[in-house]
Image 1 (cartoon, rainbow, N blue to C red):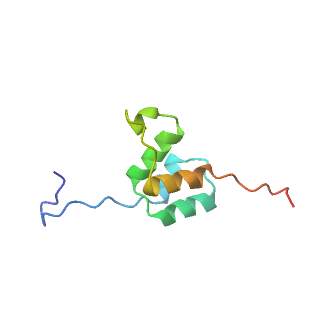
Image 2 (cartoon, rainbow, N blue to C red):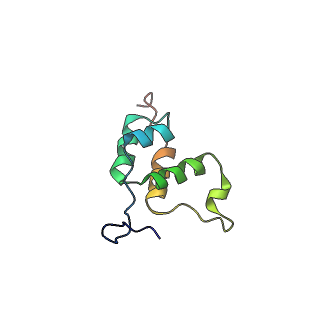
Length: 88
């Protein structure tokens, strides 16, 4: 049980900050970092995405569930192709 002893409410996961995003995705550019921060992802969401990107199949579990929700949105941001600046 994950309840706060003072009020009996279940603890709400904390939204990840820029330090978490940059520590998990070291090569991330500023635009992608800002987009992920706007999602309001938790540290757990982003750790799941990092493991998924690293190819740790056990993150999906035995049933092979795909990412969903905020984690899926963060994955899409991270894997989106950058526009080629040389193109016209």
